[in-house]
Length: 314
Image (cartoon, rainbow, N blue to C red; front, side, top):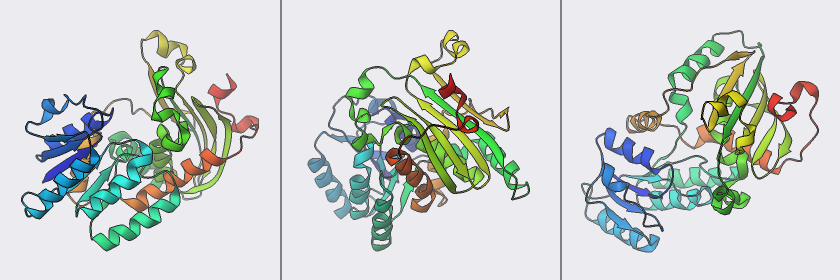
């Protein structure tokens, strides 16, 4: 299959490049307004590259007219969050399937329009929900599914990933472009939790700044205290002393879920599922998009003691 990639200079692009190569496919074109894309040579040679989207669009249309062997079959989208919707539309108009990084869109109602365009075009929109293919998290889901359906669990989600001053000066620091901390770094965890514990019943936000967000989710089968941060100062002392800059933690009823390993090939596994016709689409993305949207627009409230995340209390 022939792939094109939009956002080739971005942070997440190498995982998509690796996934395209490891699934035995070809990257034929790439686009980014930045020309710092030497990373392409590590994975593919002879990739047509464009810094202007208009020229990239024209080239993709030319390939489409050359027939199925030459056309672009999949467009991988690694662009800033606020552009995802437009680039998915481009892929569908081109007659290609879209593979889009999270979040699929920033606003829930955009999903309805994409679903309509998907039906009209006959093509598919896929999203990257990589935690759903992590073996340890799949095992946790199977365990919860085997329990009585009325059992509730107490869950703590903590994700601290240090970012420098550059973060707030980039598009990621602009809420209308990134969706803020809850969307930009939290959405795949919100997807994971609803995938395991069922749909959202209630949301509270206890803290919300440019670099931190915390609150409480009540799901069908879990009470979740969550904490997200970009601030190195929020790292536990033992994590910082170990020289680490990121800490992921999920506890269920006080027991840690170990999933720190196995992240390097998750995008490849997602691509394998997509190419086999089992990829995650618009409806799978809906719940987490709606949660992130609610968090972004919620008023902060003082937490009850039982709902306050331990990191926020500290």
